Image (cartoon, rainbow, N blue to C red; front, side, top):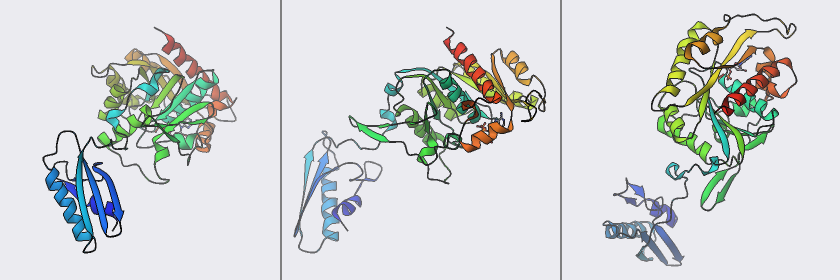
Length: 353
Ligand code: ADP
């Protein structure tokens, strides 16, 4: 057993039983033939358990090292160096200083095409000449890596003044960041509650976004504590809500609207996006079949008194392009135009005072 492993067996009873190595309390270890010298660091205010800990370290070393080894354990009063692990409480908003608009893309429930809309909206805004980033905060199903064919990319992390900064992945003129880049391939993310929330904040606040006109945040589906905490801790200006036109979706949209209008949140709603508004077959691009009913989105927008920012048809190529990692909004196909129109409307709404 090496000395570090031995020291890891000594727990600090006053610090939730974390070990001395983890607590950064081991100042130095000197190993010579037949001799081991350990210096423990104690914070400025003398630790009442100092003597107990020095004794425990001595005992642990005696037990583990060959008989006859000279063991010297001393202490030094000094603040333990800060743990290298990024601490969410140390996160600042500095990396967002040069971002003009931070907009959440939300939906009352999953499967309505929120991520498809977020990714294509980002690409479309970039095609209009804006500088754009997208943070995929959908902890339960991060889809940006697949939809942009950047799976397996590992964002570079750089140490700067003792802080870690993460570089976004740049592709298609957009800066992407996804919680999916940090998961092992095929491994489901099992973050829940506060842990998910902290991981998300880190993924947005530690990223070197640089100068951006728009930072879109693909929010987790639904409405709940994670959402409220995320919206409150990140200076989100407002949100876009994605829905499908069916009457049954109305209740979900209502939940989404209520969340942003809730007095604890109170953020602007830039508008509603009606996805899957009608079906258009590839071979008959002029035909529109209202398979989920007509004008559902128009009625919902009127009911909640928010603008209808855009209507996106169901087109096979939208799904195919998503699966292939080449967002349809990059193309000159007619279905790309719906996303360009949506981007124009959002830009107009967000520039309103
Ligand atoms: P969410 O983020 O709301 O869970 P996704 O964006 O992942 O939804 O979309 C769910 C599925 O529906 C995906 O396979 C996607 O390609 C497909 N899809 C979304 N919008 C459209 C559309 N307008 N036309 C065709 N397929 C779509």
